[in-house]
Image (cartoon, rainbow, N blue to C red; front, side, top):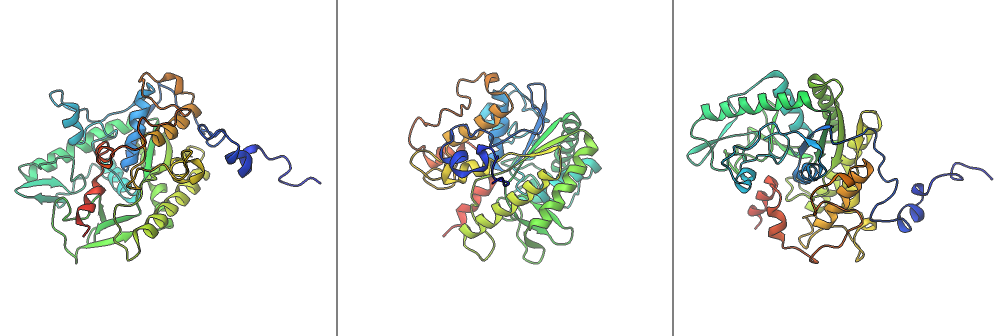
Length: 363
């Protein structure tokens, strides 16, 4: 008897598509909606996990744009500490869709709000990029000059962008009640002063995120009408939650909400693709032979061989795997790490993750 399941491909069945599949490559897991070639001009943004994407695409000889290259006297280590070349703009980690929407609006409108400069000891920092100047700047005026320069350079970069890759990280954020503007970090954690009458907690829901994604798409098209998007969700759990729930529940709710919104938005738009890095890292079915997700002992940092597996699948699906020039570039058939575990500290230090600063407040 014929029925809808009679002629489905292997990927439609758990046994064929997962249990008996090549779990280093996962054939048919991701089918690109559009091409990425070495000539495609790519911009990256997002949470901590998004930092891997730009690095691996550079290894694959792709054209990854950089709006604000580091000054030549800076060492690579110092450049990273000052927020250079981590993403395609010196905007630091962008954890929420609302934060990205806000930044793109400011860039498009050329808007610099002088109210959002925080103090840090005797120095000053940009409230929307509080960690890109680790020791701060000597005056409010200098912070605003830096912000103007950042917005202008990022605007120029976006006009050249063919594909914008955004990794959604969090649903939780802190908002300035009078203006509705959100911050990447809670005021008072790295700079500024927390005011419980002014600063309110937001946990964005599915509808909020979908609305933000629609606005983000329109804003990106103001810079380049043909710009395409790749969305992915960070698999990294929350460091801390400001909800009343256990952090495990908040993490599951947050990632599920982001995944649903990103997936639906991609399904409704031919020029938006969803790449399943979240599923590949967190599903026990995709993990190393010992079973379980691809996390370090701290159950938060993603193992380097897990990153290699994810990015290898991405590169292979776009025909870019053979383009890599770095001998350490990802290979989806190589899922053995040099050591069973790396130290938590080494793994955390490899990425610039502002959210980790919240761990210092755990009792």
